[in-house]
Length: 337
Image (cartoon, rainbow, N blue to C red):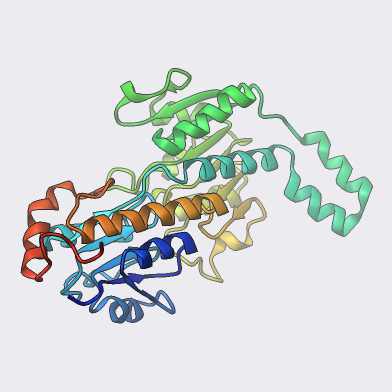
């Protein structure tokens, strides 16, 4: 039997590549994330490790595909329903980058509280004395209120740092309030947006969370409050946020994700001085990328061997997956050992 081919929508950490090669796989890295490029790269692949949005018809046009494994926690880059219908496993690596995202949020809250970005700009442009004067309006995180929408692995780690490290009051919103840690007080969204000095969106994108940060909820925020989004761009009503920032109805926003990515050059958010923008990198660090690559590669090999992966998002696919695998001529004991 031929060596299995694993497509990569973009390069992963060398440790992950080494695991796949040691497992007998041939690697194929897409040169760019364009839909036509990804379709060509995955056309005869046995698995794909996903770091870019897959075209909605990629599963149908990849007849040998057994696995689409997300290099991260969110599976919105993968057409999950179609994969499940055709017997393709959807893997993911939940929780691996939780610390990286939480530390990113804390860094941004500290920078906002101490006016770091503005102070740097003024120091470069206008000198020491004018920059130093900005410190008069600086504040501390201690005693402030953090509101976390989506208290999963990321939200829990963030709440832990905020409460135990900075003595912040933490409000949290999640569907199952019984799973909130003891140092997080449950709050419905109206109350959370009203009382929080920092509102952090860390929830998955679902039909229920799309547009969650609406004009109505943004209007409840204090004029000194900040919105930080490390979830998905579509969780925020972007036009409503642009309006709130432009009118200075809230102090500012830190946005790592956007409704359409990359962010367009003429997007109005780019012109707002109180919008801090980063290119979807909150979860990326040397440590997290290595861990995500290792986990994604290991689960990819498990699936190719016909073994249940450690993290299977579409768990009900398993019987159809085994049928697809047999139909493609894979042996009972896989070819990657």
